[in-house]
Image (cartoon, rainbow, N blue to C red; front, side):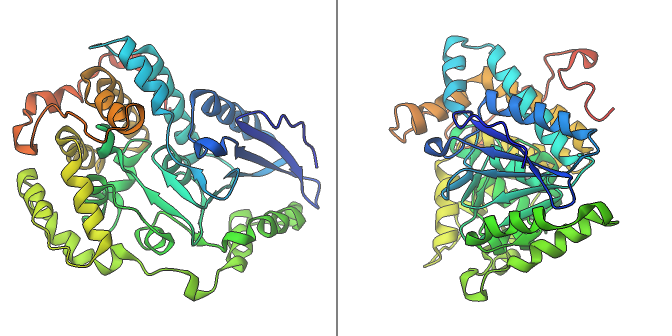
Length: 379
């Protein structure tokens, strides 16, 4: 095992030797008290490590996980973003532009990496954590996994590649999940195509040892062998809760079938939840969420369905910078995480009140195409 380890680092960067002498690059998010929320320093460390391993023949694969049992990664460091927005009202804060630029380059790098990337997404996986998980070649969830894109609660929108992966989920489930922030369990993640393996929570160390014990030097199909090894750590069937999305797919498609956003909003408002806790929570989140975000979710999914991965991230950087400028995002973070009063003062009372001219502003680039910070992405 090759390790030079600073346990105080927010990301543990390790190179672990396999039985064949090749290395497994191991990145562990190391801010358990903050549920491993991704900050700018962490994103830079991870991106630098991935770039350094990309062309090294001795590194056979990469594993990304989170320290502790509660969370893989509960999102991005929006508290720091709030401070930057407060200091630069009605402008795009430089810190936000840098953070989202680095984060999206990191996510894109994982999506397009030339070596297999295993992400162990146990516990809470939200926002920025979804960006890390969704791009991996081997996405692992566990019975404790709770995946969600709840940005509607803070006046943002499901970024980190959501414009690419949400439109490509079954039926209208991507739109519903973006509008309601509904959480996904392991079976949900598998059903909608956001996870490749369901592994037992307690098997992480054994799974890592299995990867380290294998002779990768003689392996023709590394990705296939990885799938085979990970499939050996399946939990007992009674530990896996059934999929909420699958059982509600017909209803979700019915609620979200209209091209008119006002109709979709009305359908979710009037949805009969009865004793269904999952639906009730989804409806409650939607009702309390930002009306501006509702429009952004619809537009990102509509536009992202026809865009390449690189172009989705370029569009999202424009959207996220505009969110830092307009003020809705700042107010959402204030209410949820700063003052914690749970009472955001949204700019509009309803979806119907939001002018399309404002919505279009979120997609208007503040840069010339050649000056876009992600202009070289995918080239």
